[in-house]
Image (cartoon, rainbow, N blue to C red; front, side):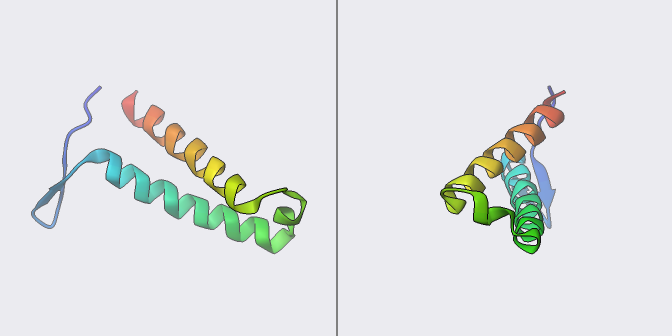
Length: 67
């Protein structure tokens, strides 16, 4: 497992923060797709569902990066 700091324009950033931004971008895309097809109408609590999807995407990215 080699998770080292990422150099962004001379500032060292923790790798989890980069993964969190990547997960957020993916979830925004997934949410737009779900809104386009009307899938969020069938969910009891859309914000809670989106938060759960964010955690799933983030944990998947962390597991893939740690491998």
